Image (tube, rainbow, N blue to C red; front, side, top):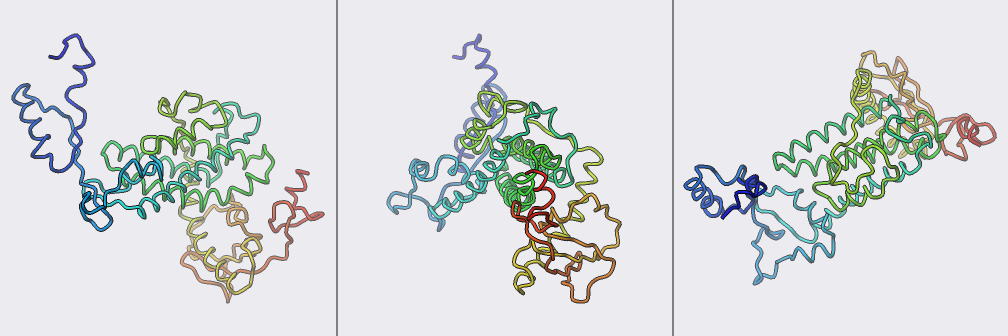
Length: 380
């Protein structure tokens, strides 16, 4: 009998969730419902979640006689528990779920991409300017790219939390992986490295990037902690500062993750990146690839770009340092297209080789003094 003084026991019923295979609709789900309704006039559960069965990569039911059974303990020993968890959320578990060693090997590669993203963030947060001692010391205003990345992060966090509540796990995995690969590794990290590695520790641009990385770490940990708990805990225990969302005994005890609300000016800069810079960048990178193939340039950093925009909208791109963001030597926006320019959907681009020389410290092609660009010369 239930102890009437056991308040915890009373509050634990009805169950929040019943989880079982699809064969239990006529089994446990049904028998529990009938019994509970007769005795209490109430269902014994608030929600029901059913899943399909695990099959091999050919869709065959696993059985010892066929020799196609994969033991979860063997998977954990070879790939780790987090990779096994990643496999679960990467599938549509409402149907039959395929598993094999090649599938798990592919998932382990994607796990490493997520892990390396977090590793890059941690590594660069290890070298904070000494004046940053709490969240209030972080930059209050970010550059356009910073605002764009934070905007994407906030959308990702909100969508992930919604999908968690609905037990819709696959979109969490796919959107997280896409964000780490395309928005961070191939875009934000790529254009941030020069500042992180070569700028003065106290420079405004570097501090803005550090602020962006700080909020990125908070958001990504919030997303991954339910599905990759060991990775999340490892990252959390190695955070190189002790303020904000850091400082708890465990990531799983953090209640409030740090967020950076966008101002009206931030929203305008998000639009500038999404509607102007990214389409421009796609066209320019195609033109640069063609220029490398034709031996006009050896690397993108040597490029002098003549750009003619096809849209006549008045873009406020003056606040964008296009040389830094495109990782090239020179950029000119022209009113008319060059005769031999490469034609893209957003702009036409002519790629030439710059006359500027390579800085021996940062390797950018800039105007030099004693083999150093003005930024690097000022730091020595």
